[in-house]
Length: 199
Ligand SMILES: C[S@@+](CC[C@H](N)C(=O)[O-])C[C@H]1O[C@@H](n2cnc3c(N)ncnc32)[C@H](O)[C@@H]1O
Image (cartoon, rainbow, N blue to C red; front, side, top):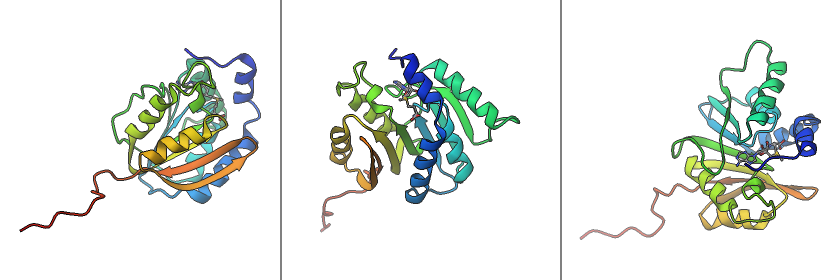
């Protein structure tokens, strides 16, 4: 299992407030979803962004996931301090591997991946397994759903992967060496070519 080293783990679990406030504000300004929306976050770290989204946006379900059971535990502890009376009804925290997501096809209106996709391959600069994670994001997203990611590695390759599959760019912003991108999944049930005339 690809694991974060102790220094990386420390930063993922500490000082997250400022960065997630920035992320949340930008998302809230660019993402529109119905109150029935369901949302999956992969590699949720300490769950801080999940809490901000659940508190700030109206949603029916937000599933915050991480591969590493210790990280899931850290998220549960962080959220328990924020919600001493129990998690909001719409928020779940559970283990899941982005390379093999335990969810049915087309089950989410949005999938969020903040600085996670480069973890797909054991060597982060190796793109080889990233398309497997992207294919899983695509599989669990509903048509017209939103794929949201922040990355500092493989930026061009990830954008190209989505755009080759018909995703439309909704918004993008750069910050230091990273970019955050929102893309809309095409509705592939809608024929794109001209219809044949009968008779
Ligand atoms: C750099 S941290 C980012 C955490 C959080 N999204 C943030 O921005 O603060 C990467 C996270 O991805 C998780 N991760 C690594 N490989 C994963 C995989 N295959 N599936 C799901 N999560 C994974 C790690 O455990 C870690 O929590």
